[in-house]
Image 1 (cartoon, rainbow, N blue to C red):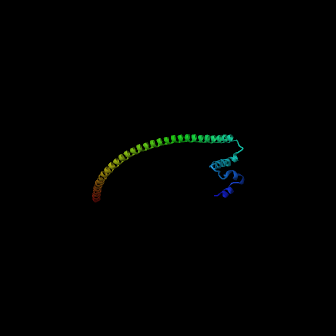
Image 2: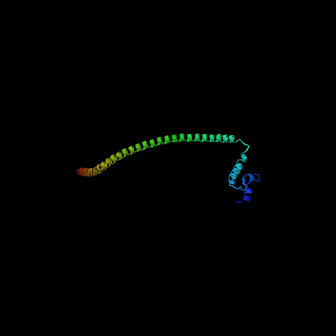
Image 3: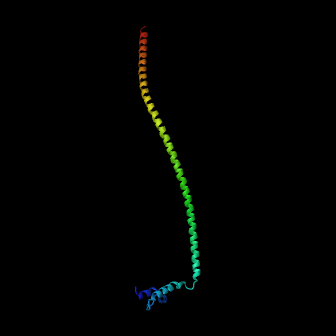
Length: 160
């Protein structure tokens, strides 16, 4: 960008203050340029008391910092509370898992005992079936003999 383009970007009254003139011999142009730049930046603030502006800024920043500090303390308290709740929940969960493991072990033992009893009863049932079948066979023969005896007695009484 050349000097003419720069003058179009800055209002004409301020253009003379901000844009440095040609540097005189001896290198004092840089200092003058910096001074002119600072004058251009501070020109809107001239007429105001700098100490008052610093005090206002400091007061506002103090207020912001105090608010942030309160928020951070509040978050720290919430974090501590949540940490305590999580610790309680973890302990309760550990206790419940332990209780469930104990109950599971007891149920396994009871299941094993019931399986043993079931197997024993099945064996007895098989023996009982054989005994019942034999008893029914013997009862059938006895009934058959009694029926034949009754028939014989009836036939004898018929011919008498």
